[in-house]
Image 1 (cartoon, rainbow, N blue to C red):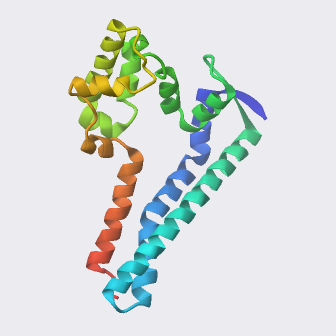
Image 2: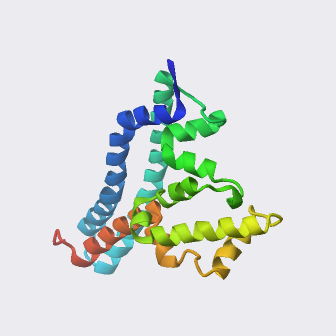
Image 3: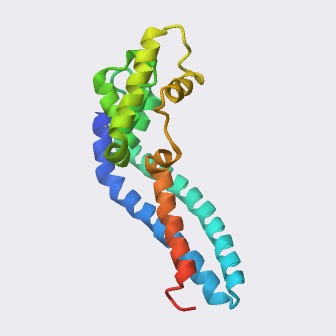
Length: 211
């Protein structure tokens, strides 16, 4: 085993396990709807029964895939730590360093901005804007405005609690709160679920295999 600073270790982790994780992710996204569709539609004749059976298989497959993904993630990280010891950088704890090894710049940005917004720098705000590429593509100005509103408020009101509901109240009163559509578009998990369920609906409605 050899030591490596956490943010550098992330690059090696990505090289070793990035492709397997990407393949597994898309196997779940595409494979689960296909499995649900084929098992149910090939087995039953009545459409409503096919639909019910496919939904049951979908739920079970999602639960199992979540468990398998969790186990694989832990196995991958365990194997990595047999080779590389992630060394905390910039005052991070070992637990935070491990998250940086796994998530890279995303974890660093979240840790660095997990403080009073009054202390955010312009660079840190830009890092928040860049957290998600889809959100940056469609909502970069709104995210930047939201961050600036928070920073300005807490600079002017240093006694306010930034750990409670105050930040949400501030952005809502300023009219820059995250809307429903932005919340869906900006969240990777919701986007991938949209692809999965959209594909599932396509299979159920159009029955491309002609069962």
